Image 1 (cartoon, one colour):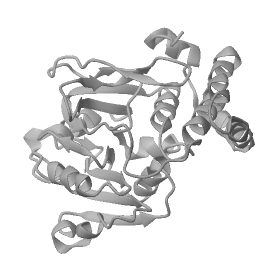
Image 2 (tube, helix red, strand yellow; image 1 turned 90 degrees about the horizontal axis):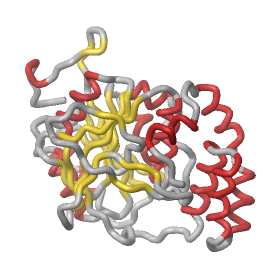
Image 3 (tube, one colour; image 1 turned 120 degrees about the horizontal axis):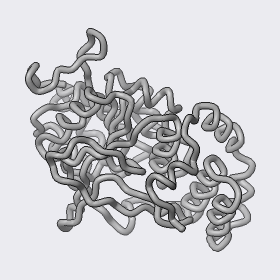
Length: 308
């Protein structure tokens, strides 16, 4: 990371200074993408590299980032066929060279010290997944981490503790911005095979916690996120239901799984969604998660509260 000194956190892993790769997945975000990166590069520290993954966009918003000004800052555009947020982030992570990864939505505004505080927290506790404080760009409401509230796997933001608070455990790191050491990310297998957008962050947080890693809130790392009822691109009517079924199959059993799958039944093309989910690789993924788990899922809900 640039603009740092030893006093601002040049921590090392062994003898190697930490570096940050910023991964921004984008799809037809237009001016929002440029404003997001402008806020990143106005920070007290900036990424060592920024990988912008264009997930099949058609609005030309990534073309500007291929100009010399942005290339000189370490910004690289990587284009893929439209594959969804999880796949786009995984593609960026595969290209990343930094010791730390920060995943960021393309419609955010980072405060000046946001990346510096995320990096410092990862330097201090490298085997963790970090969640910053996220404020609604259209208002004053803010959250830092989230918890599951129902069988739809909807999440509710948790109120941030005071800025001076050291990182503390939360149930979920929402995907709008999360940070993790690159080695840890790859050890967890990256983001799961989820469609378009939704629940990839829930799945990732659950896998991390079950593997014995902490999901930590970093209240002093702050950003604004543009929450909106609809994204600037068309979504399939079945992707959220498929993601719900997949998450339930990979992580839950018994009545908890049944409760989630019943929520799928009331959605459009439910039979098709369930057939596709059951025909997917969920059994292999479930076995992989259980092979690395050191914490039972029951303890997760006992620790953070149940949706029931």
